[in-house]
Image (cartoon, rainbow, N blue to C red):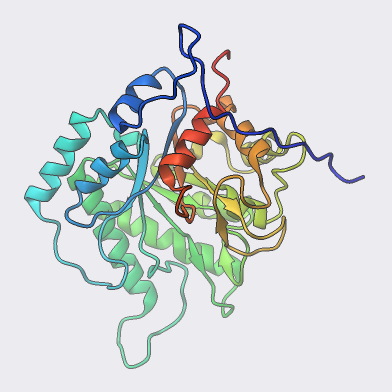
Length: 330
């Protein structure tokens, strides 16, 4: 029998104040963060670092976020300039000024990286694995300099030339090497959509990597809602979010859950396509995100938007929508 679908309730556009008035909340990001301080959910978005890495903090505050993600350098090059000390100091100062806990900031790894790759690059002596391993060390070092404690990245792909077991072994090897070279930062694996030969669409594959890492206290997982849905977890079904988290707990363990990527899906459940959509505009829909925002097992971790953010419904509006789904009576 097919899972029961739920009706989507209309978004609330006004929220009565303490005195019963219905005046909308001010648009200032700083005011918004102050007003929702008592909320157990830390919702934000992936923000840019153009003009200086500290600008990421300003962007998050301006859009009303209480958590954020960012890249640590260019996504177009394996080798990047060293992190400027004054820029790093300014980033830490801005985080302190706006009271951001490092546990609510989630740097995202370069898309060039493939720590599971067996492929050798043509006319080069070093292969993709070696370069990915070196870049992982560099990224964790940048996190340490910025005062950050988490680092999220895509596990990798076998490229169809080695087994999944061999791929998970290579990923774990890169992580073990990076852990030896850098202090403290937790490496956070992201679940994948099951597209192509990527590893991590199944929770068991994430666990296989973690099991091969020597210091498992430095391991975590970020669950992407679009990826999970595309991989076959039906978040639209009654109790779908709870069922996914229950299975994650059984196969991996909730102690490893460090973050959530909040993305609707352009594709249908089980499509294996990594195609993000704005919140409520895709096949996942508002009811599932209401369940996520009100799920106590997702308290106090970063919930990060990576949606297209089309004009008129950009990150600030989507953050506002998600907070409006929070049940303040709980």
